[in-house]
Image 1 (cartoon, one colour):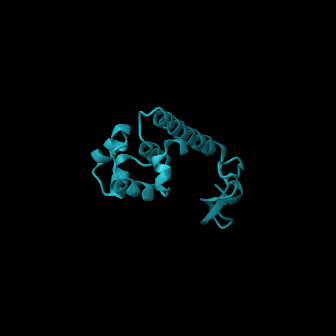
Image 2: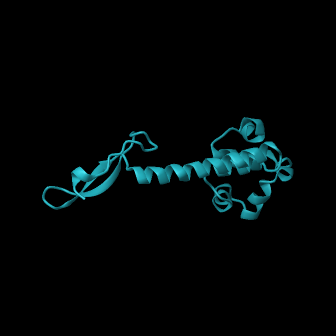
Image 3: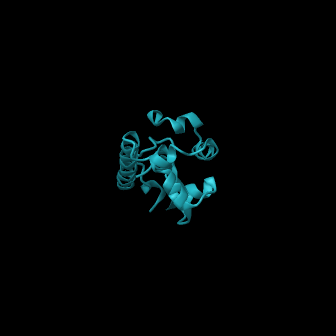
Length: 134
């Protein structure tokens, strides 16, 4: 596509604050980068993906509030992590992190372990311990 054909559909999720580079042909037929605020098909797909992420976060939040899961599960999902990624950050086994996502186990964890999680999630220890703050 030519430079003037690069989509500029200003309905993207970032509200035009950021532009992504796209390749287009200049007047000499050479490829160059052009900044684009987005195009509708991509914007729709990205919005659907983020809606799915937010729905998962809300589902886990409800399970934390009901006592089924620990706040670790919520912050893990909110930070787009899985047990493998989180385990590598807190230097624990994956199965240990998975176990810590259960409220019965979480309630018995020492502060030394919870501090690792809080630092990883960039939150205060009190915020991690208090499921009402999520």
